[in-house]
Structure formats: structure tokens, C-alpha cells
Image 1 (cartoon, rainbow, N blue to C red):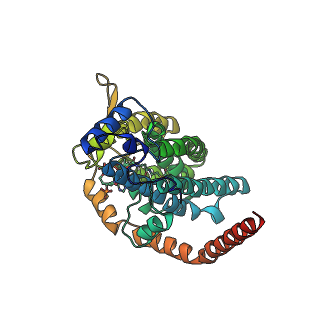
Image 2: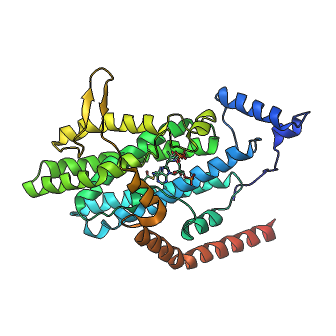
Length: 332
Ligand code: BYC
């Protein structure tokens, strides 16, 4: 765990003559406003630290749980090439989880503790991964829409005020961009295929459109953390702003595929230069967050099983590390 030097006050504070909380907070905010990166050893308000642990760990859990809906198709991908690409993509998502757990650990929390919270059902992960993938087109729709939504949300996170999170996001975004293209390419192939393939692509778009819009979180009026996270420059855009950008970018992509977005109220607003879209069913979002989505139980069971089955690997890795460090100490 990267807790080096995580004294509760940090070097800035130790230098601060007054050690007054308000002064520290205003100096911290001034650094954020000046676009300085906050690093692990710097003083930070406790609420900033807690917000980051919450967001980064939820993000890490989402990456890891997010391996499941597509992982489900690895053995059934329609060609060897598709299978290889999908394995690489799913493996990338696992890697994203690993970088993000490491970024969370810089804030003084252990990865094992975060994983325990997930497995005990106490931690959130993105609502989107509680939906099923009944056809190959769902793999295309995930890459196109879910990774597309993820990029929209995550590119601004590369400029997040917290250095370790921002730096982890740079590589993640590059990989997500490849994921989005591979998903779109699957959709394009299906859309140019037989009547049955086009119907399969349309049905997948119908399934994933609204859950993708929900991925951005509640409306700005209902977002609990949004305003403070924007002041701290953890978030650079609000949930609604990002959702709108996603709709504006994605609708022309659906048009190019010749597929219809399942929203009768969708219309281009020439004056605003934005697409207007119909109301989101927030009761569905609430249900999924409360654990009652189509696949919540299945996802948690799969994660718990994988964690148990991986126990020997973790134990073997820890034993190997202990052996190596004992050898190194003897040699020193
Ligand atoms: N699902 O005050 P708000 C991927 C929660 S994975 C579940 O607006 P905030 C991929 C929120 O946590 C990428 N919960 O919160 C992987 C809060 O609950 P708590 C996933 C949600 O943090 C594999 C409450 O609702 N991306 O790309 O300001 C394959 C109130 O919300 C959701 C990230 O994790 C949701 N959709 O804003 C393919 C991005 N939305 O904690 C692809 C990083 C909201 O108070 N996270 N909640 O109990 C963020 O940017 C922000 O945390 C959010 C929410 C925009 C998601």
C-alpha cells in the first residue's frame, strides 16, 4: 500500500505556523484554483480525501465488475480475431481496476479493504454493469455506448486535481478509446450485414441506450456530491453536461449506422445546437442502485466466486514476495 509519508497533516501543514484548519483549507483551495496537482503527501481536507476514496474505489469496482458482461462472450465470439480482441479488451478493464485501486491506496486505504466492501455489497459500482448481454451485438453496444460514455466522463478526469487519479486516467482513456472503436466496428459490421444482424444491432441499441444515459449519474439537481467535487476540480463537468455531450456525439453515430435511437422525443434543437432527449426513468436507476437490477445478484456472485478461487494466487504471490524480501535482507 502506498501510504509512505501519510502523516495526518502533511508537509504543508507542518510548515504552517498557525495550523489553523480554515487557513489550511483556503490555501488548499487556492492551490486547486491555480491548477496545481494535489499529491498523496500534501495536506488535504478530510472530506476531499474521503470523496476521492469513494469515487476512485467505485470507479475501480466498476472496471472489475465491468469485465463480466463482456467476459461472458469470450468463448462465443464469432471468430478467432474477435475472440483475441475481446480477451485483450476485458484484460484492459482488469488493468484499469488495478491502477485505480493503487491510486486509491495513495490516500491511505488498503485495496483489500475496498474489495471487501464490494464483496459485502457495501460499495457501489456503475449501474450499467447490471444489465445482461444476450447477443453478440451487446458486446458491440457496450464498446460503442458504455466505453463511449466512459470516455466522455473520464477525459476530464485526466485533469482531476488529485495527481495519482489524473495520471492513472491518461492511460485508461487511451485504452477506452480503442475499446469504443472496436465496439463501433462490431456495430458497423452488423448494421451492414443481413436483416437479422441489423435487427440484432438495433435490439442491442434499444437495450443499452437508456442505461448508458444513466451512467452519468443523477441530474445536477439531485447530484449530492457534484457541486463540491466541481469546486475541488475532481469533476470538471456536471453529470448533465456530460450526458448532453454524449447524446450530441452519439446520435450522429447511430444515424451513420442506420439505427434508430429508442427515444420518440429525440430532436435536434437548432437554436441550442444540442439534441433534446426524452425523460430518463430514474426509478429504474434507483432500483438498480438498490441491488434490484436484472443482473445485480449474478454479478456479485461471480465476483465473490472469482475472489475465492483467486485466494491461492494471492497467497502464493504474498509468500513469494516475503521470500524475496527475506533473501534481499540476508544479502544486505
Ligand atoms: N452507478 O452525487 P453524485 C468503464 C451514485 S467503468 C452507480 O452525482 P458523483 C468500463 C454516486 O456514486 C467506468 N452509482 O455522485 C468498464 C453517489 O452515491 P454515494 C465507470 C452511481 O460521484 C468495463 C450517488 O449516486 N466510471 O468504463 O459526484 C467495461 C449520487 O451521485 C452512478 C466511473 O466510475 C451510476 N451510474 O458523480 C466497459 C467514473 N451515478 O457514493 C467500460 C468516475 C451516480 O453517495 N466516477 N452514482 O453512495 C464519476 O465520474 C462520478 O462518481 C459519477 C457520479 C459521475 C459516476
